[in-house]
Length: 329
Picture 1 (cartoon, rainbow, N blue to C red):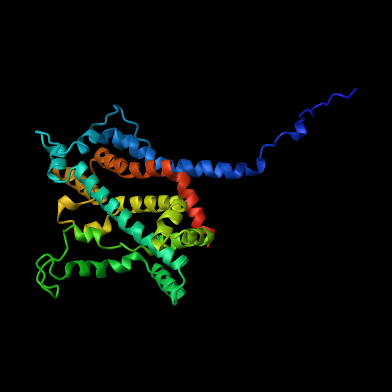
Picture 2: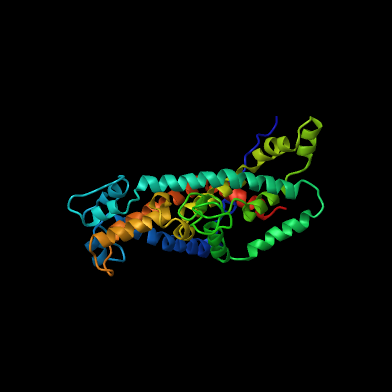
C-alpha cells in the first residue's frame, strides 16, 4: 500500500519576513507625502471659511462655519450681488468661469491634435525611415532643448506683433498690432514639440521592424503602417503627451499674459483666475495686506483640482509611457 503523501507544514522560518530594512524609506515617503499634501489641505480648508478663520489660524484654517459660497460664486457665469463688494468685483472681471475653462479646453484640444500628429510622424520618420542626414537632423532638434524656453519669449512676441497683414499690419508687419489679443497668438506657437518627437522616436526604436515588414508584404503603405501598426502600441506614450499637454496649457500664464491680457474674452484659466482674484480684491476695497483669502484659495483649488484628478486616473499609463521611452532606444 502506498504511503499517504504528507503536505509540508508552513513553519515560522518559511513565512515572509517584514522588510525592516525598508522602514526608513517608507517613513521618508510618508513624511514627504504629508509635507506635499499640507499646502493643498490649507487651501481647501481656507476656501471654505472666512478671512477671520484664516487670520486666526493661518497654519490650519479650520472654518468655524463650512461654506461653498465662493465655489458657487465663481462657477456661476455673470454672478452679481446688489450689495457690491467682492461679488460685484467678480462680475466686473468680465471673465466668467465657464468661458475661461472653454478657452483653455479649446487650446488643449487644438494642441493635442496638431502636436500629437506632428510628434507621431516626426518620431516615425526619425526612427523607422532611413535617409541621409537623419542623425544630423535629430541632433539639431535635440540641441534646441538645451536652451530655456524664456529665451524665445520676446522674439516670439515680436513675431506675433509684426505678423504681415494681420491686426492692421502692412505687408512688412508695420502699422498695427498683428496677432496680439487674437486667437492665433495662442494657437500658432509650439505646434512642433521636440520633446514629444524625441519621446515617440525612442519608443518606436524599441518596436521591432518585423511588424512593419509583415504589413508591407500585405500591401500596406507608409501611413497605414504608422497608423494601423504603431499607433495601437503607443497608447501609454499618448497618455504622457495628453497629461503633459493638459497640465502645461491649463497652467499657462506667462505667454497669455503677454499676448491676450488686453482681451478678457480670450483669457485661459490661469490668467483669467488671476484677474478674478485681483479684481475682486480691488472691488471689495480691501487693503493690499488683507486680500480675500477665501476667494483666492477657492481659485487655487479650482486651478489644481483638474490636474490632480487627471493624474490619479491616468497615472498607470503615465508611468508605463515614461518608462517606455526612458529606458529603450
